[in-house]
Amino acid sequence: MFDFQQMYREKLRTPEAAVECVKDGDWVDYTSSLGKPVLLDRALAKRRDELHDVKIRGNLMAGPIEVAECDDSQEHFVYHSWHCSQYERKLCDEGKCYYIPMVFHNNAAYYEYFLHVNVVMVSVGPMDKHGYFNFSVNTGVAAPIARKADIVIVEVNEHMPKIRGGYDECIHISDVDMIVEGEHEPFADVKTQAPREVDRKIAELLIPYIVDGSTLQLGIGGMPNAVGEMLAQSDLKDLAMHTELCSDAYLALYKAGKLTNKYKNIDRGKGVFGCAIGSNELYEWLDDNPGIAAYPLEYVNRPYVISQIDNMVSINSCVAVDLYGQVAAESSGSRQISGTGGQLDFLIGASGSRGGKAFICMSSTHTDRNGMKHSRVKPQFNGDIITSPRSQVYFLATEYGVINLEGRSTWERAEALISIAHPDFRDMLIKEAQERKIWRRSNKR
Image (cartoon, rainbow, N blue to C red; front, side, top):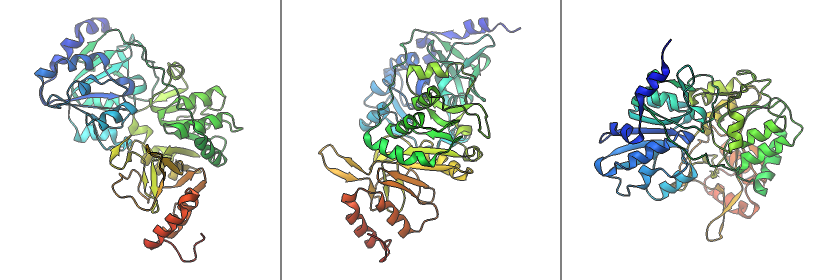
């Protein structure tokens, strides 16, 4: 038998000793969410003045990220994110973070074929008796990055839930170069974003489209939370989970007896996810749960995989849509607020599912900081970053209705989109459609 404890002792380092391997010009990966290596990040930031042009990648991380905060000049450290958390959005606003566009199902391929990783630093659960460290709620992205790295450093976090997986949920000590231990603060108890009244109204409109046995992908935010809340109170039964991001909405469905995963075509009996962000109660539910399986995003978000699941229902949010049906979901103008993530993956996958439906939802208006109300249905984007092209958009919903754009011509799209816009802006949008030659003279007003 191998003596894994001896191997552990031989590879054990202090955070300060471990980060000595980082050199000028290196690319360092922190992976994602709870995978953030808190102790190693702190130790690396202390080397600021002796290092230059070290690039760090991460995503969906809570703050603080010390290497980003400690170097306004960016001569020493430059931080990048695949998908911005609320904290990383703030860093972008301050010029301390640069967004990397990515479609989530390509995450593993990006690293395998195109990116170099000098050092990966990732938080993991404690080693088990077989010599494995669990990637936990970071399974969606961690393993492909670790495989590509020249040097692998794991930071053992005593609070990490142990997550059962389909594959790549663990790394063996034989594939680890250094191990770091230390005391960690308990994870912040991230509370579910409370749905607004408009979110509940849109959720009410979506519920009739969902049938018993549906598999759900719920995005992040008030709208998906409202859907989860209402589904938990509905008469629907035997719902299932296949989602890139597991949130407290699924826990609410489970507690209501709605989430059984009983009738899935694949992964029967298993709620599948890539990453998880939420409350400590959520992490406790996921911990060592035989009814849960974490997979890399190359599997979870692969449109071919998604399309194999009957009655796959995808519900995501967006910032705005234009009269052509283009969707902006990751930026407000040029300001990066989140990321492409899996919206496009699930649009394509759910559209190919037998009985599947893909919804993109938004309130019809938003109010700016000066109190001015704006329509989220725009005449045509000018400078906004397009997340989902018009050729892939399926159902769109506001509090004024649900429309289906698949196979629709330009004038049909314009008419449908204006029908779910706020009434105060419909005449303006009709005029704009007429000027763009996408409004039939016989169209209803």
